[in-house]
Amino acid sequence: MLAPHPFLILFGKKIASFTIFGGLGIIISFITTFYLTIFLHLDLLVWLIMTIISIAVLVSLAELMNRIKGTPVLVYYHHEFAIILSITIFLFFTEHHHILQYLDITAAGLGIVLAFGRIGCFMAGCCHGKPSCYGIHYHKEHAEMGFPYYYIETPLFPVQIIEASGVLLIVIVMVFSILNRVQAGIAFAIYILCYGVLRFLLEFARGDISRPYYGPLSEAQWFSVILSTLIIIMAFIGWIPGFAWHLAIIALFSCLLVFLFLIGRSNKPWLKIRHSQIRELAILVNELDYVKSSFLMLRVGKDTILVTAGILKEQNVTVKHFTVSMYPDVEVSWLDCIGNLLYSLQNRSGVLTKLNKSDSMMHFIIKSQSHALVPNVIV
Image 1 (tube, helix red, strand yellow):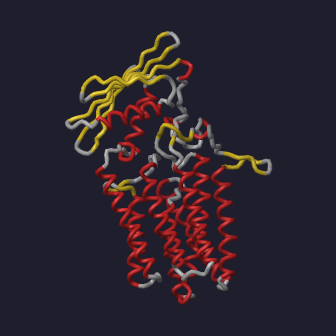
Image 2 (image 1 turned 135 degrees about the vertical axis):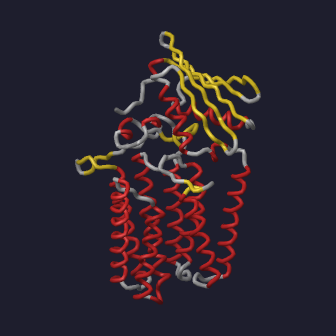
Image 3 (image 1 turned 90 degrees about the vertical axis):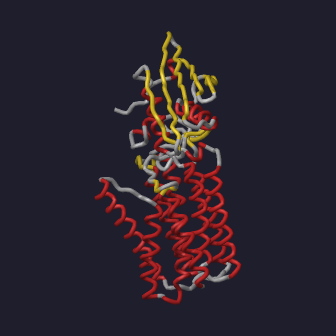
């Protein structure tokens, strides 16, 4: 079982894993962009100023969010947009004829920092995925650092590692393109578009509660769509070279829209259920260790799902029972999904039994030994 640790021992000191991998990403990004600048015979002073601008924007946004929310918050798309915009404005007045080459390098650097940052997220437990049949387990030491107590020992989809791997692959393609002297701007477009598609898809598997939604999509998905649209506009205007590349952008963006349509029409509740709803289910499961019964209501479009729960304890055996119903329209896949989520939130311990009570209702029973149900409460 893969169990990440929020702290690592480095040079005899206990340091937060996110800090270590974040710092490593910045160092590797610094080295890579320095080499690419020399390779392309660009101005090292301009590269240095771009690096300073990037760091200044990163720190400034973190401090701004600290003042607004009372804690430093790093939202990748906010930083990506702010850094690229700031560097573009700087380049427009200093290196007008080499803007696209510098943006290629900037995008490669951002990708490296993001990839290592996501590994740090994986270790720390932030930006985690939804509960699933198999996944990453986080522990009490993560909860002490802010990880939700109701997800302790729950298998979570390893979305951070998948994103880190995908971004590293994109960066490798970008660097290979730059070293093979493709037309300036293509590597930049590769990053914005490919990461946009990757992030758009992975957002369906994200389960952290801080994910804001606007309508059917999360904030990050809207950013993905908007930035991809801007890339298409830039291609048609002629800011990004290559007619074949224009067609590739349109094709990929069309696939993204088709996927969005299919998700909306699909009957896959795991993709459509909101993180806030999973959180309510998680709290319901944890509450049963302290109360005899509980219930909650979830809105799914125009329908309502009602979950009632209870607990029975006899000697060393504990039985948690859940009744899941849906009205006015009933979708069996949603009833099954809720039952499987409840089992995952129970850390998939014990034996799950499913009973069909009627066409609109299912009954789930989780039977386990009492010693397996140690309360996961952070005081």
